[in-house]
Length: 159
Image 1 (cartoon, one colour):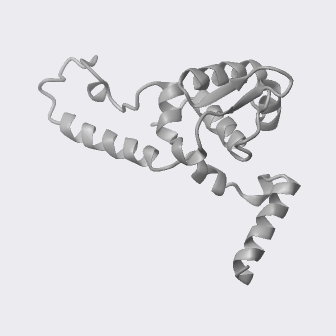
Image 2 (image 1 turned 60 degrees about the vertical axis):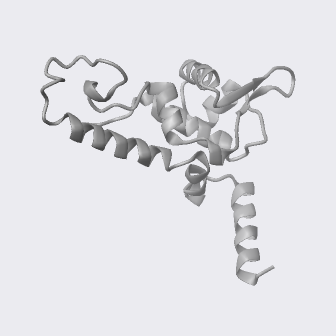
């Protein structure tokens, strides 16, 4: 089974939360509470995302974590790599020599590389902005639902 780690899954959820209000800064405890991620795990994830250049941390009374770039410029592939390491389905598609004993003779290697590239491209094709747009309204705050309705009304009326 191909599966992302729980840490990566949590990281995507936390970044999606931050992307809902990209100008705001939130404390680690606020992010943990809003996303249901245990606080120690949330702190660890936030630090890794900061080291990867996806988050910026701000000190002080109005401090906390915020996105380092616009949501449209943060891809799911970057998040996966920041938290789970290189996107590689098999050892032979990782950078450098893999752990595979038949790597040089393997007839499937070229196809594994194609499959890995397709998965990488799919993850690069989805941004944090896309993730926010896909949030069902039941998960939005009352203010976010009202703003979404106003936006829809303006589009329908042509205003």
